[in-house]
Image 1 (tube, rainbow, N blue to C red):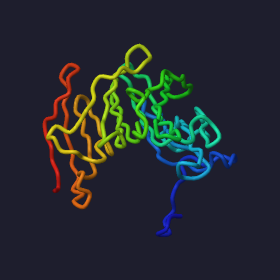
Image 2: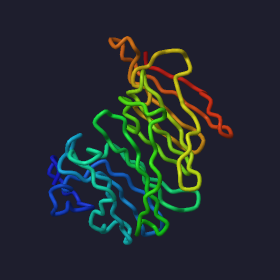
Image 3: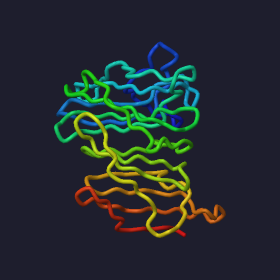
Image 4: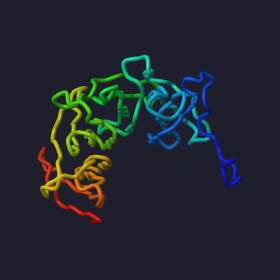
Length: 238
């Protein structure tokens, strides 16, 4: 039961292994009338040192039951990547499933691992990683992710005042298509702290200006034409 005393159905029970017993940051897609794919972070506890790892479960009965967690790659404080910070799950134009997982490192020069499934989530194949452009550190690359068809928007809010990158999937790898920045000349701290993507439209959020006492926040709407991204709209609650 939840805090209000109401019954709650558990979709995926935590595994017996305590290293993966805390399940969070879930994403879900439907691939057929009765098939649901659930992706999430499985770790010892919530946080940067909990060893959260990307995991998936599958339902073939419309969500009435799910398979036990399948950890796709183990992260942990003693390993090359300490935890998984965020996930994106979507369906490619050819119908394959795509899963992206941000892998956190000590200097915050995060990498993003990718997997692909061509059998409705029954099996997964790892693809090429997305790396921070120019090897940027302290960038929180991949703290936010948005996936739509063959495109992904990656937020890097710790790089200078923040950045968002657009990558396009081609022949099993990800190619950088654009670097999105504020277009009004304002130094927005945390640009890329939130991202959203739908088709050829992307929204990038910024949390505050360089004048931290104001903290107004802003959002930018970008549109893709060919491989060119243009800012259409900017709004702020300042």
